[in-house]
Length: 225
Image (tube, rainbow, N blue to C red):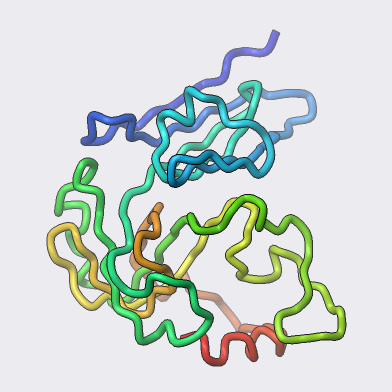
């Protein structure tokens, strides 16, 4: 009989079910971890593949859940902040002019969570595309944007928001830090967007060597910012 999954929980300041937990399956002969993907946002549970158990769904609020069924594996991640201000609708150009605030959840964090962030010029933001419905998610390939020759590009070879786990990653400029608010410019996320993580951008973590990308990607991004 396989051993029960081990769970590590990291409590936070909140009395609500606010935590990060990692459930590790016992080692199997195939040594493979099977994952599904489910999300709860706006009071609805969206399922990409796999099933979201009611006990886990009740603990989530605008949070992505990667994980599974039958105790195979589980990752839960709580929304740490929300985007305030900026655009209310998605648009594919002019994001560089947008200004917004990333406001930490005061039930979890105090101002000390942002101590030292004002020493950096740029921020990496991981967020959840909560306006994307599960029916819109791409699991394969789609035509290259702007081309009409039938060329296909896979979901992992593009930065479309219709991703399997609906996770977005953006870099923006920090204009100021005040209490629980990080004021930014150039963040391509609309107001109300759930934020999952923040990291200061450090140049040493940038790409090494020459950057290469297809011409269609350069054309698509020409007016994005």
